[in-house]
Each structure stands twice: as structure tokens, then as C-alpha cells.
View 1 (spheres, rainbow over the protein chains, first blue to last red):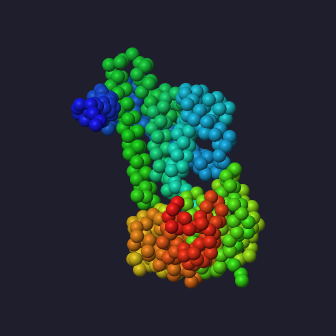
View 2: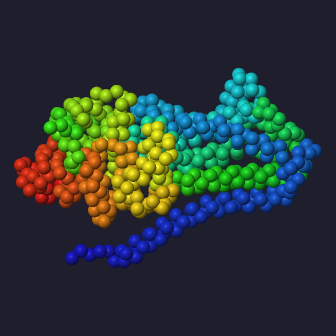
View 3: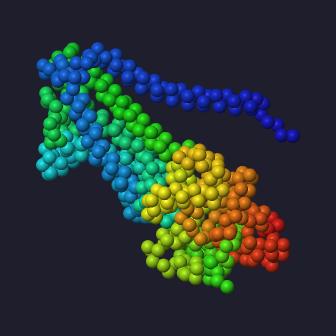
Length: 293
Length: 252
């Protein structure tokens, strides 16, 4: 008769428990880190937050007053970059997944998309300055900044579009072709609507990435101090991340400027969270619209 | 006698893989032909010849003649492929309604092909749903999502969707294999009804189903059409030993 080790079942149970607690501990600690960051920043920045902080211009060398131009600037840049990057990225993802034939070319496109995602953001900044600001003569402007940020977000949007389309079961495509539908009609009416809620995820990720970036806007749009709102896309603007950098590093009156820096961080995080929530809402909306279960 | 569908010495290759070997078959109009055989024998590939769905796979090579109404469907212009596909409805293994309303699912094939007259579309949707024996069950919820009805109803919706463009040939790729017994018997009854107006090819793994619904049966093995005859003959007195082994369940 086979003799199993004594207590083997207890040992298995114990090992299970240990692994379970390690895994649970790690995932909880990640939440804890996020809460810690939020708490840390809120505690230091909440003091300066009031209506005036949102609605007025910086005053007295940015040691007083609000951050309205930086908020508006960031919103413009996020909107501008997404208006450029989302359609282009989506079309490109559609091309890669639906039209490009398997093989060298497709692999090359994917490789290059991945490489583009790996380019440091300061390099995008330099490139944006060379091309958009100088070569195309847009000057330091919302247009140049948005274009630069769009480049940064493109790979994310392309990849998520591609993955979302790949997840659409082929039988949907075949059923459409079998009814005499063209490829274009099938993509427009069946494939993209099914994939759209997931494609929105790319938009969310893109917004998250773009709204916090400092390096790409440094040379292409961000103004150190601009006590008015931008008039056109060829205007410079302030932006929250850069403003945060400026008031944290320059100025001698740390006592008064530090809380403003933290307050700016609170607003930046709040805007990112808000936009993410909005995008999530959009995603659920389209999800319900295609009624996938 | 004129056949609805005819294949003459058809060979099909996926790259180097020889998936169909010298297959010749004649299919009589308004009959049901069952295609049986173990997995990977080429029966689904054979089915997909007739609406040129194999064209979608890269590296496919096809030799031989494939005729519908005496016309070689691989010698038509590219622009005529859509017409061919309208003429040959297809039903898939898993119910795959589009993520649209019940109404829009059936209307899809009409809109695709340029019919936009609302009244015409409504008529055709009702007619198709009736043909698919689904009208009574869904007539009050046409605007509801197609995902809200049962799997068996979804499959009949897919049949209605295929019927809406008024095809003459209906290709069914294991249409009941993902369904429960009651839904399966409804589909089988439906096939029996549809035979009056359509020429039907059905791939199935279910021997009883083949013997119940079909007039003719073709047995495939490793890309060969081993035997093709009246269903009654195949199931009672097959000529080939391999056929007898398969239908009696000795392999598969």
C-alpha cells in the first residue's frame, strides 16, 4: 500500500495560505501606496484650495492668487492632443489589425509602434520643438504642444485599438461577409462598434499619460508665467505639471509657494481622475449601446 | 437533370496541407445534403467553397470546377462575389447575432445591399422571421437586443438574418452543435420546412441529425469524399467499409 507523508494535506493547506496572504498583502499595499500619495498631497495642498484658487490668475510672482491659466491650459492640451491622436491612432490600429497582411510589413509596423512607445518624453519634446515650433513655424503654441503630446499618446491608442479589434470574434466578420457586406461596411457596422468600448480604454490611458507630462510641453508650448488666457491655438499657455515644476523649483519664498505647489498637484490629480471617470462613463455607455453580455 | 450545385475534381490546399482531394459531388435543388465525417476531414472547408469564404484565409489554393446553377463561381468577377454571397446564406456553429436589435440583425443584409425603403425592410424582416419560425416569439420585442433571447432563438435569428436577402442555397455549419436538445429539434424541424424553398447543405457531427434531416449524405475522411449517396442508403447499406465504421461509431 502507498504510504503518503504524514500531514501532507495540512502542509498543502498551509502553503496555500502563505501564498494567498503574500499575494493579498502585495495587492493591498499597492492600494495603500495610492492612498498614501493622495493623503500626503491633500494634507499639504488642501489649505490653499478655494474658489479663488480655481478662478483667478497667479499674483505677486506666483506666490499668491490662483492657477486658472494652468488649469485651462492643461484642459486645452489634453483636448487638443486627443482630437489629433485618437482618430489617427484608431485608423492606424484598424489598418494594422484589419487590413495589413500577416508578414514582414505588419511585424515592422508593430515593432515601430512599440519603439515609439519607448521613446523618452523629453526626446518628443525636442523633436516637437525642432519640427512643429521651428520647422513648421507654429512657434511655441498650443498647436505645437498638442501635436507633440499627440505623438506621445499615439502608440498607446494604436495598441489598444489593435487589441480591442483582435478580441472581436471572427464569426461576426464572417457572418457579415456571408451577407454580401464589404470589408469596409463590416468594419464600420459590426467590428468597430463591438470593439469601441475597449478602444475608449486607449483614450483613457492616453489622457492619463498626456495630462501629467512636463517634458514634451517644456519647449513646445508651456509658458513660465502668462497672466491671461490663450486666445488661439497659436498662443502659448500655462499647464499644471509645468506650473508645478516652476513653483517648486524657482522662487525664494518657499514658505508661501510650497502650499501652492501642493494645491496645484491636488488639482492636477483631480482633473486626471475626473477625466478618467468621464471616459469610463463613456465606455460604459458604448458598452451598453452594443449590449454585449 | 440539372443540379443546383456541382463540384468536379476539386482540390484545396491550405499552404502545403491538402484539405480536399479530388472531390466531385452533385446536389439536387431543394434537397438537404448532410456532410459528415470526423473533425478535420474537410467537410466545413467543402461547405465554405460555395460562398467563397475560404478566400478569406491566406494561402488557400483551389483547383477544379465549382458550379452553382451551372456557373463556375470561381471564374466570376471580384465584384460578383458579393452577389454570390447574397445568393448563399450561411449559418454558423455558434449563434452569432450582431450586437444590434433583433430587427436590425435581420435588416442588416438588406441595408448592406442598398435597400433603404423602411416599409420594404419591415416586410422582409417579418417574412424572414416567420420563415425561421421565430416571429411569434419575438414580434413584441423587435427593438430589444439580440443578446436578450435564448441561444436557440439566437440561432433561428441568424437563420432569419441569412434568409432575409432571399438566397437560394443555405449553408449550415453545425448549426445545432451549441444548442440544447429542445432548441436542436426546433432547428431540425425548421430545416425540414425550409427544404421546400431552399437547397440546403449542413455539416454535422451528429449521426442521428444527419439521418433525420437530410436526403443525401456525403461522408468525408482526410479530405476524401469517401461515399455520397441517398441518406437512407448510407445509413442502412453503405458500400464502403470506412463509412460503415464511422456511422456505427467505431471511430470518429
